[in-house]
Image 1 (cartoon, rainbow, N blue to C red):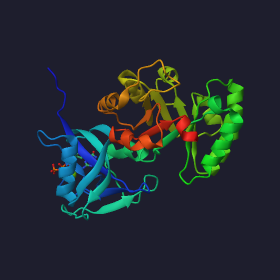
Image 2: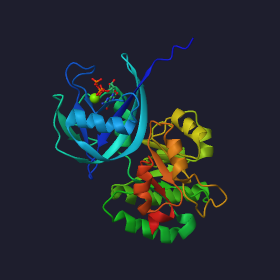
Image 3: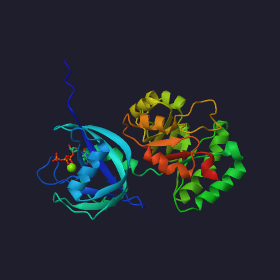
Image 4: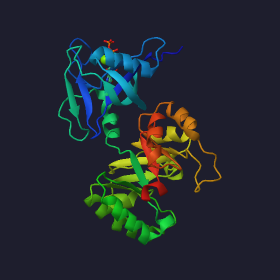
Length: 317
Ligand SMILES: Nc1nc2c([nH]c(=O)n2[C@@H]2O[C@H](COP(=O)(O)OP(=O)(O)OP(=O)(O)O)[C@@H](O)[C@H]2O)c(=O)[nH]1
Ligand SMILES: [Mg+2]
């Protein structure tokens, strides 16, 4: 006999501003976890999609009309009173002023410096996801040559938005890769950016890189997240690899390739529908779309449930 607990589906809205600040509300008196801070939202009613529930709940609880929301990540959590499946959306546009229709308080927050507490226990991974940028750039020494790529890197570092770089150069011998990594980490850090090494886990610790990004093959060799690294991501192509990425505790996965690319001309692209279908399985970490994408594709990627895009050539034009 099955004793699987009933799962309560909940739609949750992360209202974000252009500078990355997001809105939390305090849970009203009389509900479980009263006084805890949460993202606005509530339970799906019969026959409702998650997006419809989100729109209704935000209207009911705080008097706003959601006009732009994209699906983001899915978090399952077992509370003593219920097992919930939280469907998180990023809400980027709404109409109306906030009204505390349930007597709650509201506070704009940033992920690395919360000023309210406590937060609902299920929401930890969300706070990390909110720190991840819209673009992850993959290095291009192989394509451009080292001198030309380093020059473009310098130019990129003078832009205001911080660079998150995956240093991926599989053609280099380990010693050459180490020399390149040393050359790159300091200036990227000085400009406020992050560097994730590709597959080189020990080296990442040694050079105090911000983390590692692992290939499908390297991920398959891991049973757990490497210790002592701030950020950990993996490349994936399908549901099986996403499942493994979840088991080993990634902060994000990069799913592709979405559009046809020169670098993988022999593989059939997922297309945006394929990307979205895999996204809808429901993963507790953000997904980046990879493969043939440029900055202009970012809005499309978000609409299909991506957190952002990974870029190779597009990052260095
Ligand atoms: N709204 C919201 N609920 C969350 C978050 N995180 C989280 O674990 N939950 C859980 O999701 C469940 C449902 O949320 P809710 O209490 O807002 O539901 P609701 O608005 O429909 O309330 P109601 O049943 O009193 O009408 C609760 O068990 C709550 O603990 C969050 O960030 N926002
Ligand atoms: Mg609610």
